[in-house]
Structures are given as C-alpha cells and as structure tokens.
Length: 229
Image (cartoon, rainbow, N blue to C red; front, top):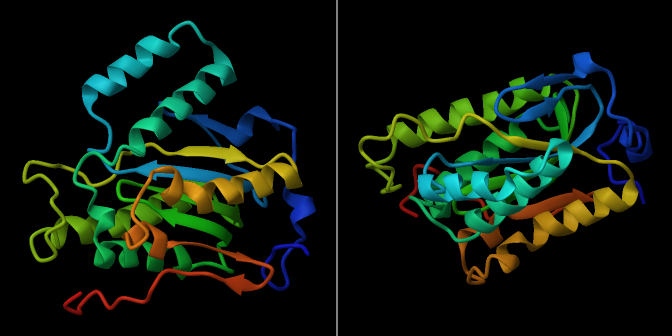
C-alpha cells in the first residue's frame, strides 16, 4: 500500500538517487537540498544537546573523510551523542513535546506530507515530503516552538539554562529518500529511536513517536499545554 495523504502523488514519484542540479542545494555548516516533492529525513536538535568537547572530538574523528562520507560519519557520531540524553532534554516534558507535535502537524497536507516523527528528549526526527522550500518549513517549526519554549521555561520547568540565547541549534540534517527500501528503513529507524536510546516505556518520546502509514495515524497522547500535566 502506498503511504501518502489523499490527493497526493504516490511515494514512488518522490524517490530519487539523482543529486539534482547545483541550484537545488545550499550550504551552511551542512549541505541542504531544496526541491519540491522530495521525501526527506530531517533531524534537528536542541542547542545544548551535545557538549562542545564532544563536537570537537567528532570533528577530530572525521577530519580524514571527505564529501558525502564525511557528512555520513558526522551524522552517525551526532546520533550516538544525541541518544545519550544530555542537556536540558526539554522535549521530555509532555507539554513541550505536544507543542512541537502540534507544530509538525499544523500544515500537514498543505505545505508538506508528514509520514513519521519521533520527538526525542533533545532532538526530533521527521520523515516528510515537501510542497514548499524545506529550509522555510524547518525554520517555521523551530521559530514558533523555540519562542514558546523560551517564554515558558519557568512555567513548565523546561530546564533551559538562564543564559541560553536559543532553544534549537540553527542547522538541521536532511537526507532525501532514494527508493522504497530506503523509505521503509528510515521509518523503522524513526519509530525505533526511543527503544534504541533505551528510554523507559513510559517516557514522553514513546508517546510522541508515530507515523501516518496506510492511512493509520499513531500520534502522541493529546496534552493541553495549559493543563496541569
């Protein structure tokens, strides 16, 4: 069964092994690809999720790699550190996780098709097909949720450092899906992330990890941000 929203293109039309034209790419500290109807695996993380000394160690480990291989090795190392659950882990708070969950779903079916997600304690994984510029979509998610987090830090005890200037790291990772096997493996990776990180079954990450495959949505538990939870 094709996993897509109604009136959308089939999955097969959004897979590619072609790296496309140079104008599809832009570079910050990481390379990003913007092209309509690509299915992309996206990861973004909290500002305090990886210690500076770990970042330096990662750079030392990958310094002899080049090109795509270097980016792949960097991401693997980042994932290992993210799963350690360091930093404020503000997304472990169910109210904060719900705010992020709502933001991800707000324009689903309009600006993008959201296929799978995992809101981990200090980072977020998403599988999405874009209808608009990917960088603008990610920025809209991070801008709204980041402002909310900084404004509600004390109210919900999010544990964000008083001297913190931002909630999210500016950059994000994106990887386009090459084929159905790549898509299926990525969905499995996203859904398995709480287990891989050895989080307890009652953790917020399990409640806010899900997918919309085969027309079945498996979302996180509904939490009112103004409730006492």
